[in-house]
Image (tube, rainbow, N blue to C red; front, side):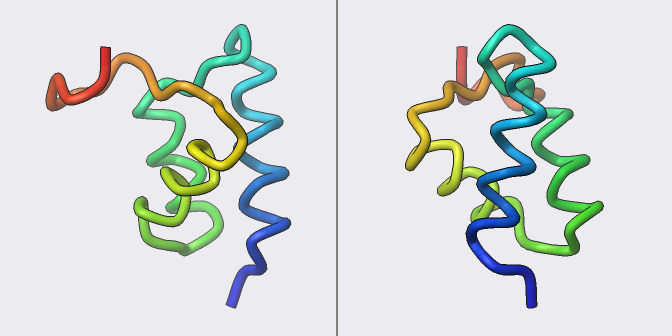
Length: 61
């Protein structure tokens, strides 16, 4: 099981590479790479106050 700290670190790194925001597709890649549910990546982004952008479903703008 991946620890929350590892998820948060991956989310922070991914967001830093995209201007401080996290594209949905990148969030999905993080979840796949760490083998965790998207919900956990989304929660980490929320906790870190990182905005998810470019949602394929149009949920986040």
